[in-house]
Length: 415
Image 1 (cartoon, one colour):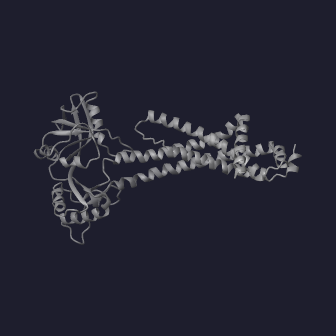
Image 2: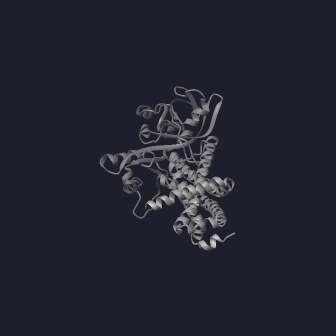
Image 3: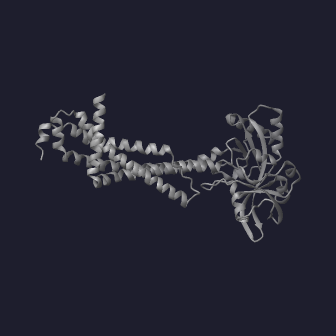
C-alpha cells in the first residue's frame, strides 16, 4: 500500500512537471476537453434551467389542483366533439362543496368557480391589451401559489356583493403604474372603474406558460355583471395531493352525477392537471437534451482523441527514459500510472478551465436574458470534473499500456 501511494505521488509530480515543461502543447491538447466540458455544463445548465422555469411558471397552477373544463389541455384531432360540449357552469362549485361537506375526510378539499376573458385595461393614456382576466371567489386566495407584493386579495363580502375591485399582476401594474404604487388607484375595464386593491408578486413566465404577472383577478359576481350573458367557466378543485388518483375518480363520478350523464354516455367535461402541461413540454426538453448530448459527446470524443495522440507522442519521446526506469526496477504498473495520470491531469486542467468558462458564459447569459432561468449548481461542477477524469482514463489508457509493455533493452536502444 505504501509503495502504491509513493508511485501515485511520484506520478502526479512527473505529470505536472511535464505539463509545465510543455505548456503550449498541454494547453492545445486540453482545448478539446475544455470545449467538451463547456458543452456538458451548458447543456446541464440549460436543462436544469428549463425545469426550474417550468416549475416556476406552473407554480400558479398548483400541484394539488384539478381543473374541470370543457376542453382538454392537449392537442386534439376531433375538436368538433369538444366544441359541442355543454359549458361548465360555475354554479357546479356549490354542488361540489356540498358533496365535500357531507363527506369529511375525502380526497376533495374545496371547489372554486372561475371564469376567464380577455380584456383591455386602461389607465389614463396608458393601455394594455389582451390581458387574461379571471373572475373567481375570495377562496381563490387559499389555493393560488402566489404571494402579494402589496395590498390584499378581495374579501368574501366584496365577492358576494360584486364590488368593482381587482388584483393585478406584476407586469400589468408595471405597465400602467410604472414607478408608482397601484393600490388605491383606479383602472378602467370595459368602460367601468375598478379599484386596484392588490398587486401579485412577480412570478415570471417561461416558454409561453400562463403566469400571474400578466393577469387581472376580480370577483366572479362582478365579472358576471359586465362580461357574461350566461353561466360558463371552469372549476378548480383543491385535493389531497397524496390521493390524486382517488380524487380524480371521485370528482369524475361526481361531475357525471351533476351533469346527469347516463351509464352509456361519455364524459362531456375534462379533468385536467398541471401534469398535462409538463407532458407537452417534455419533448422540447428531450430534444434539447439529445442535441446537447450529441454535441457534448462529439466534443469530448475529439478531445479524447487529441489527448490520446499527444500521449502516444509523449511515450515515443520518452522511450529511453522508460527503458532506463524499467532497467532500474520500475514495474509495469509504475509506468502505466505515470502516463495514465499525466493524461488525467491534462483533462482535469481542461475540465477546471471549461467549468470556469461555462460559469462565466452562464453569468453573461443570465445578465443579458434574465427571463431565462439558468441553474449552475455544485452538481454540475462535480459532474464536469468526473467526466474530465473519465475522459483522461479513456484516452490515456492505451498509450500508457503500450508504454508499460516496452522491453527495457529495446527502449534503451531507441533513438
